[in-house]
Amino acid sequence: MKKILTTLILGLAGVVGANACTNFIITKGASTDGSVMVSYSADSHQLYGALYKHNPGKYRFGDMVQIYEWDSGRHLGQIPQVKTTYSTVGNMNEHQLVIGETTFGGRRELVDPTGIMDYGSLIYITLQRAKTAREAISIIADVAQEHGYASSGESFSIADANEAWIMELIGKGYKEATQGGNVFKGIVWVARRIPDGYISAHANQARISTFPLNDPENCLYSGDVIDFARKKGYYSGPDEEFSFCRAYAPLDFSAMRGCEARVWSFFNMFVPGMDQYLDYAMGHNKNNPMPLWVKPSRKISPKEVFDAMRDHYEGTPMDMTVDIGAGGEGSPYRWRPMSFTVDGVEYVNERAIATQQTGFWFVSQSRSWLPDPVGGILWFGVDDAATSTLTPIYCSITDVPECFREGNGHMTEYSETAAFWIYNRVAQFAYLRYNYVGKEVRRAVDRWEYEALEEVEKIDRVATRYRSAEKMKNYLTDYSIYKAQEMFDTWVDLDKYLMVKYIDGNIKKEGPDGFIDNGHGKNIPASPDQPGYSEKWKRAVAADHGDTLKVTEL
Image (cartoon, rainbow, N blue to C red; front, side):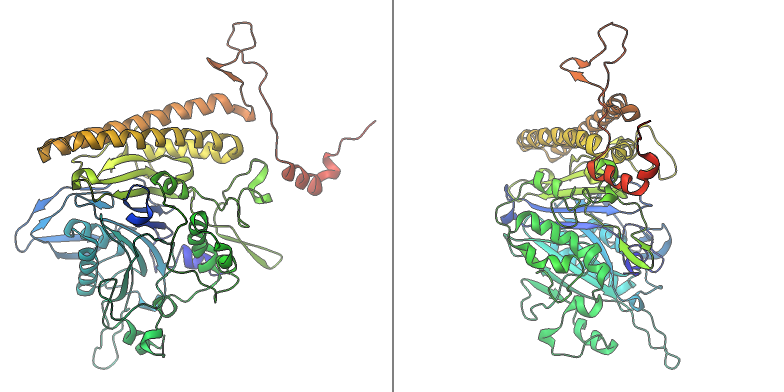
């Protein structure tokens, strides 16, 4: 258990960024509207939430691309530019291709400090060059192989309007022999297509186990993925029994409890019988692993995916709102580090799907029945998914909303016009009184998202009437920017409202026309409600300090 911090926070040999993320994947046959959906939370204590934008370009032979490590900003080197690049916004491009990731770390000795391509650069370079998921897999593999892979083990969600894949890769490390200068570079990898009608997920632990060796329609892999494991002493059995995750990312308690538990919780929302894997999710039985994908009992809507990203294990044995760690206000948050020790015994602070240190998050929709400029939507948000809302960003936009613009504030500079900071203001207040303020925020989230989902259907219809691609893109750009600004303004007002209503631990009374005064017309509120603390909290305080606090009769 002492390795939980190492595995989830420090496991990337110097990487300090978005390496504790969560991805859900919903195939078109598993969604209510036929869209392929991918969710992603970029979770890092140092990542600022912004919407990245790359405009399409034409380049000459010999042009180079400078590569900077996404997590740290460190310059890694340069690679040749391609002739043409595509437009991208966030983690989606103009062809409805989307790529998300979670870092599983894996075997430390396989990190190559001389590599040029880190996992973040692989994502954004590939989005600029690929049209389909299969093409993206090929580009990721080729670029990392040719230029060296600078990060540790990585799982990618890769989807287009028709297919969804999981690709897992890890470097070969760097070794220069004392004689002969033998150098191992590149990656080993495997990618599997998720069957239509199924859902999958990954959350910082490699999940591809055994895989078909002769099914290129549904499974792709590097030619030496098994031989290299044998060479390194990670595996010695027959090819058909080889497991990628067992060889390159062996399980420990933290991998199950801190990572696989999030996958289990997502599956548990939509698939009956997941209790059979509860001992695995809780870190008690590594010999009972979950399948890579499962078939939901019903089709899943976009709003349900949004809300799945807000999970804190509610209703499960790991529910973060019910133990004494939730305090007197039922808070599902535990500040880092991820473990603590009492009298020589180590305990875990749960790592839920929704977490305080999210930089940005999204749920993408790739919709095959619509033209690409309209079909791709990135429902985008910043900060904690449980206290923030998503707004629609069409994949074809030519400019980004000011509230999400890179450079509008950063982690050490507050900006009055940045969504990241207003959402953090609301979140910090919600954390203090989660049983009241948190519920209030969630009601605001639901109102916004239900209205936006309904509105997008109308925007789709209008956009598809444009015969000019340029006019279509301009319309969708204007709408995306307008909607994001409306969202920002709504949250500015929410921040003010919450402050007035819940100041000093009180709850002001409200009527149809606003807050209720004391009847004398002097803007003095009626006596506020003072709900106090939860019963469990009161009993814990009494047990801890009751002799001092006990009221005695004179």
